[in-house]
Length: 60
Image: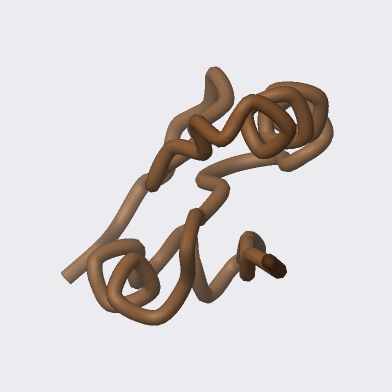
């Protein structure tokens, strides 16, 4: 079965909204999380959120 994983600027800014729409989301650079996503998918233990070591500054 296919899984939908999303990342990018929109996901970084609106993570709660994106969690409702996708099987998993990636916060921050996806290159650091990619291998973990593949391994978790193969072992049927895909997490809802993958996050690399980064910071997002959000202004109101």
